[in-house]
Image 1 (spheres, helix red, strand yellow):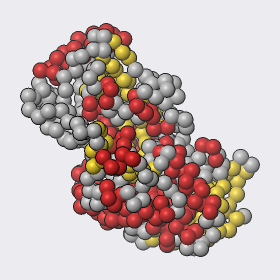
Image 2 (tube, rainbow, N blue to C red):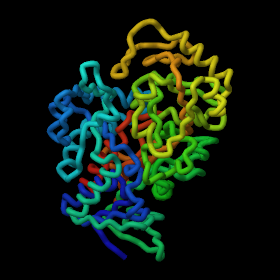
Image 3 (cartoon, one colour):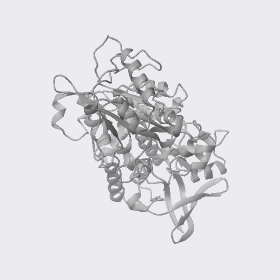
Image 4 (tube, rainbow, N blue to C red):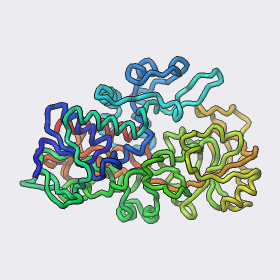
Length: 486
């Protein structure tokens, strides 16, 4: 039996942030990771590394991001704390926990600077969050500007190196299966490895073991019928055992257990679940530049309702509700060059191409008459107003049903492209109820001694939707806070 001061369960961004903060205080820290080292990193490994923080603009950001010659011709609007908080409220329809949200917003910037001081490397995300301007510069948009060098893979490599420097013991291939309680206090976990079962004891246990998105039965139970068919974007290890164990120990549920982060995801790729090589490249986030139709050729979302950062995490749910749980993103020759290379030109990308819409529909399995009628109606309904401008919400509207509120352009120039998409689930929004330091609470709001939660195991920040990049920020912020008190 191994004894430590702090035992962290889960080796993603939140778990390592917790481990680093505890080790920095001089605590003896052991981190248990269910996966073997080669497939470790939790959902964080599968991300693009985008991290939403409040900041005062480019002049402040260049203090801690990696140098880049493009900085000289870049415009990065400030993203104030009140804007961040307003975005959290907006996308969750006010169902986000105000105290947790306030901590996230106010500590996002200093936490990233702390991680940068630990050896993590950050950069401006040119390829994801900026378009070229007419003057040849770069204009960033959507409040999300900073990401890890090397994406999620780089993030987790940097975390592992920092943990090694601080003496954190990381044990791979070790799945926590339950909590050990003595006198109403958590004092360790039970575990299982390839060689058997055992116990780890600790003064404090921090659950950073993710949500339940990789458990089809729990998805169906809490998210609803059909969700068992969603594709798992990230780690297959987030199956919810430790959340259930905490509930059995008296913890209260936190946040919205009926919704999740889900996106448009390559539907036809033969390896479109938990792909360690392609990771986030299977996302299809270019829909604001085109239209999205189901196999009947009908549109069903407003592709231009807002910047992609504020809509992409909810559109997977809308795709799941379509016939066959599938849809197609449609572009023409004028919009195709604007799509992100990492996603739309990735190895093995699923795409149908044809010189006419009728041939495109026939090849893709879309209703020919349905697609032609939809595109004709869409094109004819585009306003004669503002010029198309992808860097701002340009108000260029298609007045059809559903409307397209921004970035509407005629789909009329062949060749045409159809990218098949389905619902890719990222993480579940429901988790454990905690205070702002990650202490897990009972239904009567009393802390359970020795038990903490962070990352996707913590519920309350998101409901129904999510501002892009706030997940990694939340993992870092609340992981650090838990590690500072555990």
